[in-house]
Structure formats: C-alpha cells, structure tokens
Length: 98
Image (cartoon, rainbow, N blue to C red; front, side, top):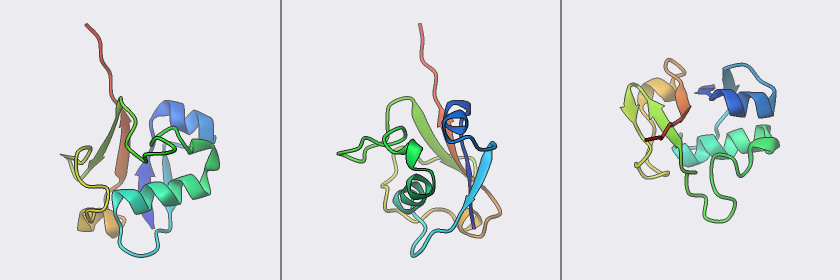
C-alpha cells in the first residue's frame, strides 16, 4: 500500500482524512500514484494535474522522504521507503505572495 498525504483543500474535496492508502500496480512512480489516486477519488481529476497535459498544477508540490520531487520525471521510481509504505508521498499546497 502506498500512503499519500493530501493538503486540506483536496482532503475536503475527496472527503477523506489527511492520509489515504492506495494500491499501485506496476512500478511505483509519481504518475502511477496520481493515476491510482484519481481512479480511487475521481473528484480529484484535474485538481493535481492538468486534464490534457498531465502536468502538475502550479502551487502544488510533491515530496517524499524529505525530498522535493516536484521537478522530477513523473516516470522516475519513487524512493524505496514510499514503495514499502514506510514513508508517505506528500502533495503539498505551495504558497506565494509578496
């Protein structure tokens, strides 16, 4: 099981707790985790990635094992601790302002 932490606005939309558990078939990558998340919680489609391009939405960041994975390839394998369920894959709402 892959653990995914969601920011408040996505938890609210999906009506779930801070963390959800997902089954991911095949290699565990950002793309595979997000595909599984959107399949399990269809109301999240388009909120994390653009519907057409599948590119991460602005102001959302991806973290795992204290590493910012936001600019990594969506097909790169996630860290072993995430695959083993020891650490969560975190989706974090970024803030901007001036």
